[in-house]
Length: 248
Image 1 (tube, helix red, strand yellow):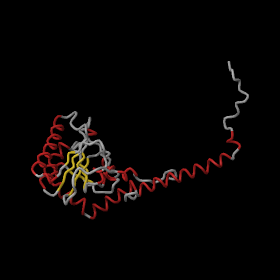
Image 2: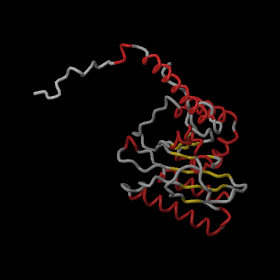
Image 3: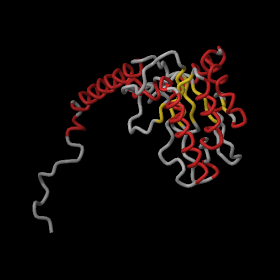
Image 4: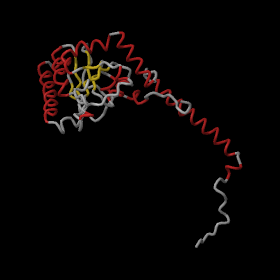
């Protein structure tokens, strides 16, 4: 621990981008599932098992805005997974046509920033997106893989996270409300966000990052000065004056 400087995740302070919708009273929910995976141990994708049902529920609520950002490889191996992904995209388009004010979003943009920071709640599969979102300190729901062979390390955050089971996907509205307002859920989120990233308040991690750089540079300059005065360091590799310029 003496060789580690706690910084957090300064990248989270740089999450930005222009919103593709006009904010209003709707609760904004990011659903960012991963792809189906190439083996059962990594079958974390939820589009077919959870996604279609939770999308249907959120689109029908009238009080939620869905931001759907699937992994770009979704459906490359499994035709059923591809079909489920396409059905969600079509459902979003249909919902927007029926009510343009809903402003649901199918997001396939190359940049990632506002999608993590802005939504009131994020729903992710087991992927790097969990910790991208956790770094913001904002509510997150994780889908529970349906494959019994999927490897899950519940020794850390996943041992205390708010799971969404496939059988409860239609209850997504109540779970979204829970992670936003339930005191125990908020306490758990705060604990794990700070355990991984420290204070997640905007700007704090960046300040710590700059301070760490300054600390390291001061330490480097100090030792550089000390070693410069040490004659043993003056020519640690010996003199090359006596070397034959034309060795055989």
